[in-house]
Length: 255
Image 1: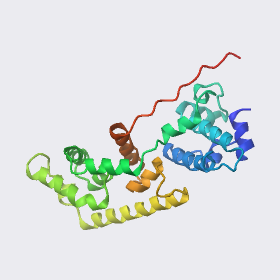
Image 2: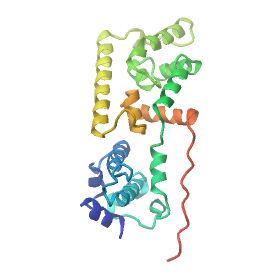
Image 3: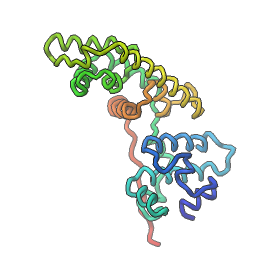
Image 4: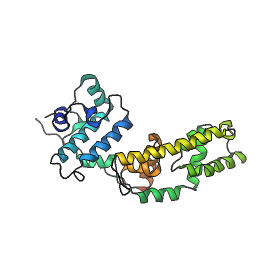
């Protein structure tokens, strides 16, 4: 039975997008988020009462592998079929390991340790100055790009930039030196809204304070801007987390 047939059998629809509850125009971020949300509901460890949980979990892994591969997704979007012989759908892949690679276990302690070491460090200062120059003083862009940033950090970040300006290290961009109070207030309101959205996402996904998934990190750091969320995780994993080995693909036997 092919992937589309298995989706119909297990999820009552042969549409890969409908299984995840998204539309055909969904972004990579939306696909990843929806895959996490749906797969958590059927994860064998979380749904032991569902006799089809393991099979559903495996099918979701294959579904995500197709939609996250540009070439395979294009084929599906254009022709409505899935290339069952592609390496993407290797029957020998461990889908549990694949899932763990996408959503590795990083604890709140890892986050706090990283934050404690990073904030106030030379590395943070260098990042702040680089981002300030890159965005020509636009504090909306700066605050959304600095790792581990929370609204309470803004005065400290501004003081780092101001000191660099006064020392002649960087240019005094008008976007920074002449920023109006209205824009500052709007930024604070946006930060509050994003925090509320992150908390709402936590409730929607049924996560509690002990959940150490990647999506939980989104809530913990209150970073609902996906590009910064991914950047933060990438740096954290590279510097402070053990790297997981890539799942080994077995060789297909001849038919």
